[in-house]
Image (cartoon, rainbow, N blue to C red; front, side):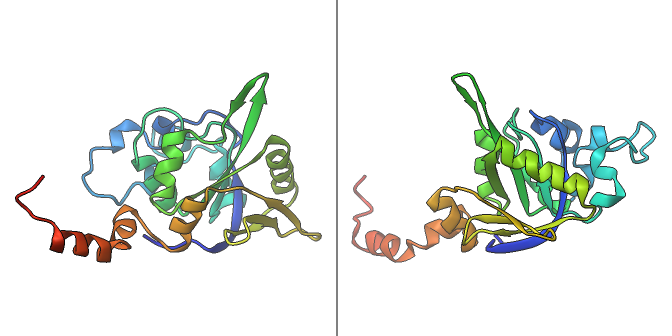
Length: 211
């Protein structure tokens, strides 16, 4: 898969919580056995009117978000079923990273991303960035204030920098194994092949007649 080290792009905001995978890529588009062609169906039920024309009320159809490659959403993004197609659709529509906040509700911590979606993203080079709710709110306000606002996502430094008249930066945490995987562009097969020498040595000395 493609490596991810640093990316600069325009920010787009989908100001909705609990966006589930059936909204990200509706079930009627899951019939294909290929892994391509899903981008045009991203958020299809929200993005298009019944006659197929773009819905002018859907935020991501706004001209100011055209060409965006960093998506800002709300908490629990990617909940619902475990379809990997949701990650493919986001990527194929041009996004390299998704930013969302975790939220504290009493004693419960609501995650920024559903677990299965986050795991699928890490295996397909889509970076998921979890920030606090106040930090994401600040980003949303800056995007609203500055049309065409761009940011740089630096995975090495674990930092999101907004390119404002006075730059604003946010640090994010990420699992070390996921960071390593993304920086080196290693999918599950790639991770296995890193151990090719040890696997070959085992196969050479292992008696195939034994379990």
